[in-house]
Length: 209
Ligand SMILES: C[S@@+](CC[C@H](N)C(=O)[O-])C[C@H]1O[C@@H](n2cnc3c(N)ncnc32)[C@H](O)[C@@H]1O
Picture 1: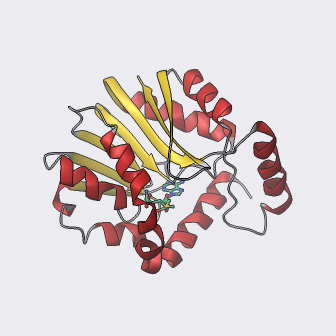
Picture 2: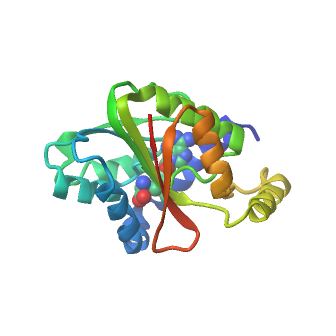
């Protein structure tokens, strides 16, 4: 199964999950809020990758009512939920695959929560380069996502992926922190900072253009 087919499977997976999504994921609000609180004080032009139903945007609009967000997601059903939020008129939604959609440019910040841990290292590097290009001068990328707790754990997920990729639509292949930082630097980012979160296998990573 190639990347396009896997992403299409992901779309169907989240279309099926969208109805009960918030009930399950609201318990992880602390990490989403932590990401928003780490945004640069002046950041108002935001790109949210894999915004889903927009849970992370709740705290964004509580703290920055003037923010303007572009929210990209492959699942139309998840975005339909986002469009019901009170702040929806300040969010432009784009339904499409990260690897097909034009991100636009000049963002103060690109944010993402829980949306990138199923991409392999080389694919993720391509995405990080695209994110880098979409940022304005001094822009920043903040990603709160699942990580592998060691390089060995990363290898194990990869083995699982290689064994089951054709029959399972959603296999997590998180990178270790060492490899996350490595590809962010390769993509051109600097000042990469890593923060612990409430979940042992989640980190908040902040990187500067
Ligand atoms: C676990 S949800 C996270 C939603 C939200 N950010 C949150 O933290 O609650 C992951 C989201 O990423 C989206 N996604 C996954 N792969 C994608 C891709 N290739 N292109 C665009 N969106 C994608 C899914 O459709 C889903 O809505």
